[in-house]
Amino acid sequence: MKPNLLQVGQNTGRVERHWIGGCKRDLEVYRIPLEHLYFNIENGRYADRMICLRHENPGVFIDPRDDKWKEKIEEMLAGEHKDTARDSAAFRKLIEDIEARDQLRPGVVLRDGGVLDGNRRLAALRRLWKGSKNTERFRVFDAVILPDETTDEDRWRIEAGLQLGMNERWDYSPVNELLKIRQGFRMYGEMIKERRLPAKESPVRLVARAIYGKTEADVEEMDSRLRLMDEYLEFIDHPEAYDRIGESSEDFKEATRIVRAAENRQSEPKFVAKLKAVLFYQIESDLMNNWELRGIYHALGGDPRKKGPKSKRTNLEALEEFLGNYPDPRQIREDLKARHSPMPFPVATPSGKATRGKAAGPKSRAAATPPPKAPRVDRNRAEAATEVFKRRMEMAGKQHSVRKLAERILADLKTLEAELSKPANRKSLSPDERAVLLETFDHIVAAIPACKKHLKN
Image (cartoon, rainbow, N blue to C red; front, side, top):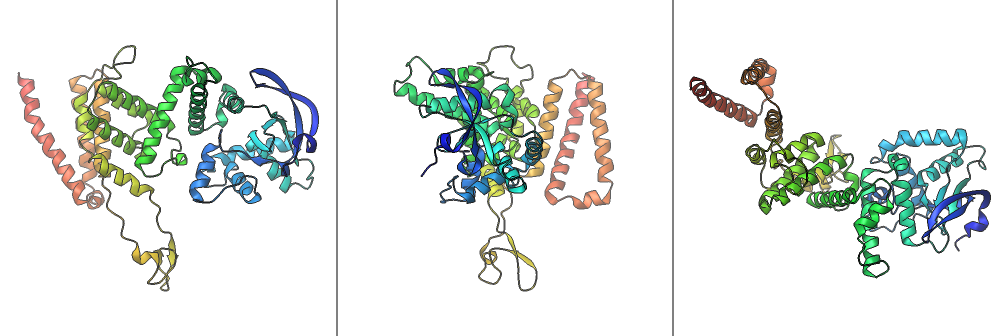
């Protein structure tokens, strides 16, 4: 039987104002015993944690009310999971702050005990409760309890309005912010379809209106960015594994601009498919940051449908040469899929040597595991092509004298000669790398007569 939080909690006499049912409501703050609460991370600022948990436990029903899953979720919020380690420092600071000053800001709780706002504070209090000799001090969580008439839209507004507002952005990861936007689009779309809202309204307008500091253009871009992330995750055979995006959200923001510009220029579908695959490889391999990716946007000539001055660095020849250094999208996909495929873990064999598989011996997985396939994309060639493209776009954006350009090339050649003079460097070169260097030198030699000819004319 679910507890009545209004009965098990203690009224503090404080109130917090929220928007419920189309009007402002002052809701009383209660002190609620921790054992009656559970982490509600299905949506909101920690949605990617629940997605990660489901991927790690396929086919298992995850009940956040169960003590086992409470512990698992607490570990993720504390930064003790391999994919959330970046949160550990912030969590420690929160622990120290609550221990020194108690919980200052109340959370928001559903009638069934699910925490809508304040999951990380709940995790910190649970840690302090378990680790403190004075168990009563940290045994309660201050929160308002949403009334029964709270709608799905009210809940979404509370999450989006509180947690995506300017004061709370630090605690909302980029991917979860995008997921919250998508949830709003779908919710308002259903409400318009069911005629609970006027047909003249649009999900984009309603979401932008609900979130402080966001324009319609902002939320449209965010939705497009999440759709490109979905394409990437499908590309690597890990749909909805948003935890794999990591810190690459800004890269995908730039990639979205590039793809939209290519489509608005009515580029061939084959070209757009190749462009997307190469962008995915660049982001995955961290060969370009988001500022450097902007060079691809400029090489396209920018977006013809976007207002304002057009790019002065259009260089389709450089872009096509850059893309030509990569195989077709299917091979790029196989390369990226291989990077994300799970590898058997090492185990000890009778000889004491490590192998891979679940158990040692002739029937272990190690015996059946095929050797890893060679990468479909030549990493060295991709790196070299990236550097050449960045250099060409850098030159296109500046006025360089011919003399300075020649001096820069000479300096690079002298540096290359010095590196090749070292036996260790030559020995480390693979046959493919030697072939690329020889081909490069042939191009340089072939270009010299043409340069001399231009000088004489």
